[in-house]
Amino acid sequence: MKSPRHTVLLALLLTVCLPVCARAVDFVEGEVIAIADGDTLTVLDRDKRQHRVRLLGIDAPERSQDFGERSRQSLADLVFRKQVHVVVPKLDRYGRKLGKVTLGRTDVNLEQLRAGMAWYYRYYEADVFREDRAAYDRAERDARAAKRGLWADPRPIPPWEFRRTERGQRDDTEERPDQPAPTRPRQPRQPDESADVGTTLGPVVGNRRSMIYHWPGCPGYSQISPANRVPFPSREEAERAGYRAARNCR
Image (tube, rainbow, N blue to C red):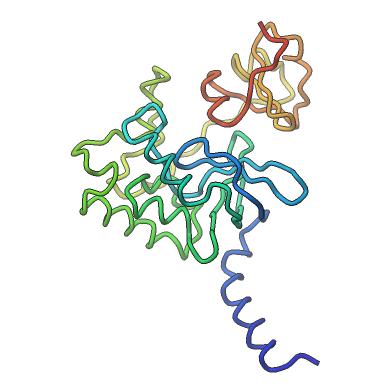
């Protein structure tokens, strides 16, 4: 028979967990062994499996941008070589886990916003846990008003605009972060994965299982299972997502 104390603890746990657990598709616990940039890290779980995690609801400067390395170092100072818990409501289009990372009671995603090391990614606000949205929005606005971190620059370039420039192409589906999130436009129809990969998925294709990418001419380019196939617009995008080039590609 459970004691009253155990009953109270269980009720408290359910109160805290249910709003988050209801949407979670996965949970990860382990040590942070790598920091790619200010919003992406790798967790090693107790079974020695690596999990690439993109911090949910924030977008940090690219490492080649101003404040990119400082944002990465900020995240490293928070969690590198520490044990974290990740709640994962979904995967991104590159197969990375989108997650809320916590260190004890500290919301790491929120701390990056408070420090002025990332933008609140308002375009994807619908993916953020409902109970976190107001806090994330307020944290970015407070950091902006206080000119903390990247907000010391009077006109910082949002990372999605920087990536757009780097790719040399326009992406009109993302708005500026200082505007309210619009109704998300209808997404373009996805290519049929059963069709020929060379004509429908562009020049670079990743293998979700091996985290290796190929391009036309690679021996394994057409041998990736449709279930594991992930298209990328460029090699740079594949590597940003944590994929590496196949060794037999020339």
